[in-house]
Amino acid sequence: MLHTDLDVCWKVQRALVEQGIDFEIVKHGYGKGSRPAVEQLSGQKWLPVIEFDDGTVYRAESDDMAARVRAGELFTAAAG
Ligand SMILES: N[C@@H](CCC(=O)N[C@@H](CS)C(=O)NCC(=O)O)C(=O)O
Image (cartoon, rainbow, N blue to C red; front, side, top):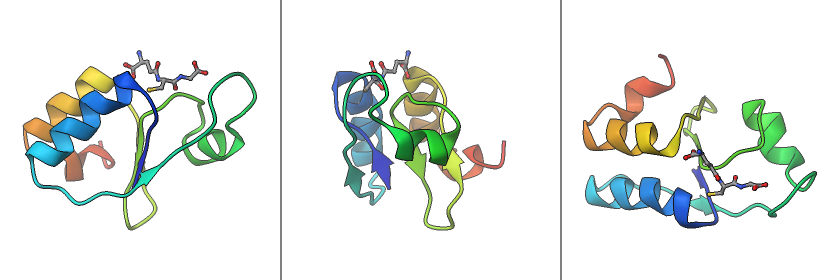
């Protein structure tokens, strides 16, 4: 599951598409105080956040996230 809404998130989304990784987009409201679900999930309010099927969560700077996806290392990211 990918939690996304705007351009920054699209960088990561595009990398996932390029790598043929299935994901579901979950949109969240924009602006201060509007993302309790994101905070609960990831401990911070920024998107994108990737939630894996096993419930683990990966959040880093979007450039780092996209680079990791392209390196084929997404599924080791949550552990690291
Ligand atoms: N430097 C961060 C920026 C992340 C970012 O700006 N995310 C946007 C949506 S894609 C966001 O969560 N905005 C929330 C807000 O401004 O309240 C990154 O590259 O990951």
